[in-house]
Image (tube, rainbow, N blue to C red; front, side):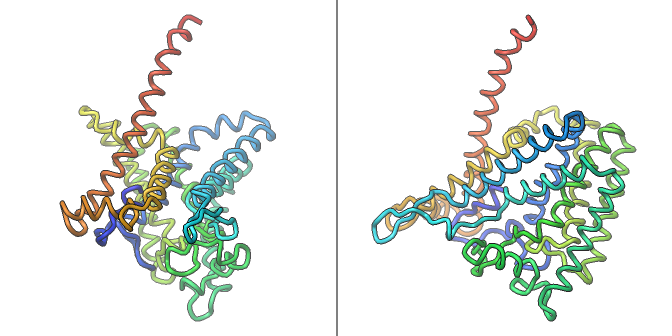
Length: 364
């Protein structure tokens, strides 16, 4: 995700590292939904513990996590809280700050998925998930522009965001006030978390066996097939987060997860410790993601010779060494490795602290 979000300036990135312009799908479009799938997968290890809590403790924990995650995302978009106008520093107004976003969507999907799983039976959760996907489709068809219900400015989600939030609180990266993480499109995104949860729960109950892998792959292929069929009448679209997009991405995630179970757990192809690189990212995802965004914003506001530090580094170093998309990719990789190195340092510190506490625990 860092490589996608921070391409080097001065050249267009390779096509697979960019989102689909509108309808369609690229490898990049798999990244964010996989975050949500992973959230659900992790929940499968924590929800059993939550069921032992009383309602008050459960709700306090879930809502606290939701608020913290949502506010971190909101404050990240507001950062650096100041702007420069005519050589003067002025406060960045709330009136022009984006409200929804990546972390905000993760927070809301986590909240609603947690409530559904905690209070509903498995059958009712699955029926609710199906209802969210079908219901979202019907809302777009019935409440959007009659001629173009799946267009950027004519979809029902856009109408709702403009009505509740206003243009100034929406994402403007498309050149228009349109938020790809809007309020209404959060509704089907809950499905990514739910499918991730039940995948993790199934692995817990069935074990990491060939039968488990086969069943996960079968369901993954089935979801991809349904998504491609549904795409004929309801286009796969990441920015609208359409229902077939949910099925396509979760289907691919199931195939990837089952493949990793075979490679790492059964075939034991981790003898060279190649997984350690990814474990650093997996243990500190929120910290590393926030760091990457804050660093990118900081690089873009520091002036160097009439341009931003971000652009200057690319133009002076990476575009000189490797002009074009290769230089853009090299910068993105180096930027990611910089963030990874901070995550590695954090991981080593945490490991050192645990090692210091271990003798005391053993003695106790």
